[in-house]
Amino acid sequence: MDSIAERIQYVAIQMIPFMMAVIMHEFGHGWMAKYWGDTTARDAGRLTLNPLPHIDPIGTVLFPLVNMFTGIPLLIGWARPVPINPTRFRKYRPGLFWVSLAGPGMNFIMGFIAAIVLCLMAVFVPKDFYYFEPLFLMAKAAISLNFALGVFNLIPLPPLDGSKVVESFLSYHANQKYQMISQYSFWILMGLMFTGALSILHYPIQFMSELSLGIVVAVFRLFGAAV
Figure (cartoon, rainbow, N blue to C red):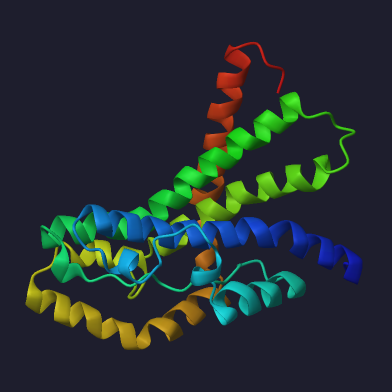
């Protein structure tokens, strides 16, 4: 069993990349909503990279800490959802589609950036630099955390982003029936988690993490860097 000191170290390394991932996820939604004509997030002061307005005491702090300290393999957590009013979009359906994808899309971009940072550190930062190991491990964690958050949110179960993507293609009446699932969403997710069904997400997460890192390493080596 891991010692308390090892658990604290693990939490310290995971927490900052996790908070950045959930905050950038919400920022992505808000930015894309503004692009499509809805300034609700900006007007509420949520179109910002300042973490404080985005932090949810339960979802951003308590749940992740419990997950990390107990060693539960599925990291559960969230930031405060940015307020969005789809009726203000210039075009409702395409606006809803792209705003819904913007959160996971931001995480995929952040995962790729984390892979670049990891390689930059491996090439240019001396291994004996005092903070090399924790920063290197944070960058490594940021890759998998961002891809995990992005993939998880694409599950087509209300209120996850994947359900909004589906909603953008449905008629009004079909959407009303689809939204009825939301009352059971929590229990469905719990069932999927405790039966191990969500473990299938490991495969796309691992694939995207390894692909992004492989692309970055190949580019570095193309320019003669030893990664």
